Length: 145
Image 1 (tube, rainbow, N blue to C red):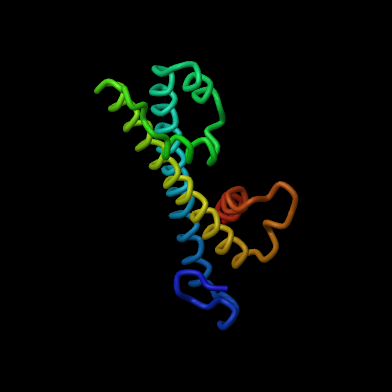
Image 2 (tube, rainbow, N blue to C red):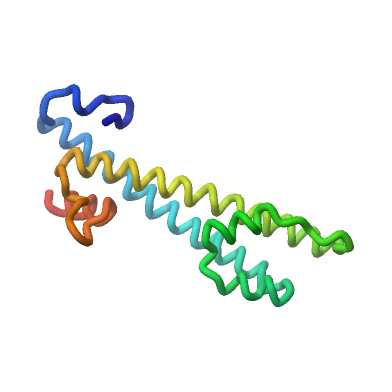
């Protein structure tokens, strides 16, 4: 398995300095995860606010879970032909926010994958325990030392 350009399967068991470096990586990944989550949530709220200014269909979307499918639909939705400047601007803002939220969620997914790699490198199999995902496992590892 590779992480950060290092082939973990090809090296000796982690020493104290490797473990400290891995814990530092977990701290960075956890901080990034929290920041990405916070920004993505703020963007979703902005998107919902824009949708509430639209028609009944947009109102319904504002109350939805903003799944990847919904965001993709919004990011690729065409504006009405007879849209006013204000409607076209709102539409463009909705498209842009949907695209940015998708990008943030992709970044969160990559962050989670990296976190899982580091966590399982430090404590093999920890994320296979029920209720122990990468985020919780990382917190647990950092709290224990």
